Amino acid sequence: MTLNTVWAEIPMSDTAKNTKNPIRGLLTAGVRPQSTPRSTKSIINMSMGDPTVYGNLKTPVGVLEAMHKHLDSYKGHGYGPATGLNVARQALADKYSDPENGVNYTSDDTFLATGGSGAIELAMAALCGTGDSILIPRPGFTLYKTQAVSRGIDAREYDLLPENNWQADLAQMDSLIDSTTKAILINNPSNPCGSNWSKQHILDIIAIAEKHRVPIISDEMYEQLVFSGQVFYSTASLSKNVPVLTIGGLAKIHLVPGWRIGWVIVHDPINVMNSVKAALVNLCAILNGPNTTVQLAMPEIFFGDFNAAHLDFLKKTLEENARLVEKKANSIKGLRAITPQGAMYVMILFDPDVFDDSINNDSDLFHTLLWEENVEILPGDIFGLKNSMRIVIAPPKEILAEAFDRIETFCKRHYKN
Ligand SMILES: Cc1ncc(COP(=O)(O)O)c(C=O)c1O
Image (cartoon, rainbow, N blue to C red; front, side):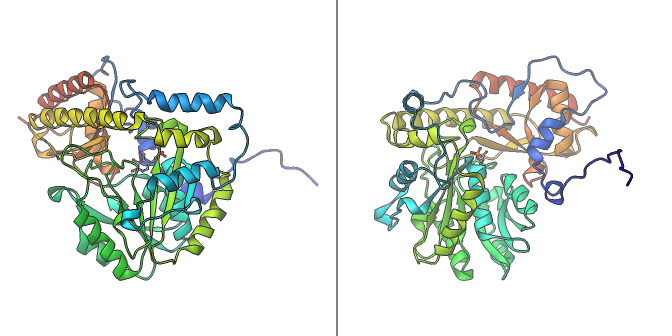
């Protein structure tokens, strides 16, 4: 027998081929070379939804102290149960139960995950398989589509309407549901829109879900992160007859995205989710749960006295930044910011007709702005909305102000004559 000693390139699996995260793809691909010289100014990053990039928004000391304590205890270094340590699951049940609204969780209703991303994966996989469909928002967090497509799930997008405070197009949502639809995914407050829905709008979505007997996955990574005059409503607390899988995580509120702690909580007001909970138990066994030291610290992280002051500071800072970005953007011809109400983002619409031929679309804007001014935003089309850009408002004010000075210079350079 003769051995073939020459190896061909080993092919990629079909799953990997179908798995594309447009944000990571864009940011790792680098800048598209242009004919003008590359800017030598320092880079300004308003692209990554990571609030820790500039160091102005710091993880609360109480969170760090809890982590130190549990690191030093030597009790958080082993494997934990796949669904999460009981102390963490109980902390979640205690924090998110809302008895006044009939929401009474036990630790068995909660499932720890690797970040909010892992929680989305758990919830989606528990409800949907190949050939099923799921409704997702457009514009929306890119991972929803990435994960759905990777698993052969048909991701059907319902529109969020900028002129209507980014509320969902309810008629369209209703029309997209058929017998293959296993979940309606909503995200409130929204990435990328920075919107916070009214109680009535969430109730309207719950009514659609009830009509079709479809559960809701409610991504609430930015829960409570809303600006003055706004009230955040958790979908589970409003839902009397529709099961809700709530997604949450420590990343944004506690400013520890790298710690990779997220969760799914099952609200089952009509007792139809026992199989889905069993599915979550099965799926958690694939990765055996996230970081155990952080899980041990979760009671202190959730219930420490520092939380109220921290949340106030975070909301105030983000709101001031949002107003600054909105004002600056609206003073530049061709740009229009949609007033945000929460989360960490401002969506800015741009009018390609006022710009010269080098700025025809979102991709042109992204690459040319990065090349000429070293300002990194994210093009709105990767979230599903053309002629827009998403700005992360977590950087310090002076950095945001400098970024918009550069954006103004850039726009002036590219206006059509
Ligand atoms: C709406 C939303 N859901 C989920 C996630 C993922 O969270 P994590 O970074 O903890 O995986 C993000 C992160 O940006 C997000 O914006």
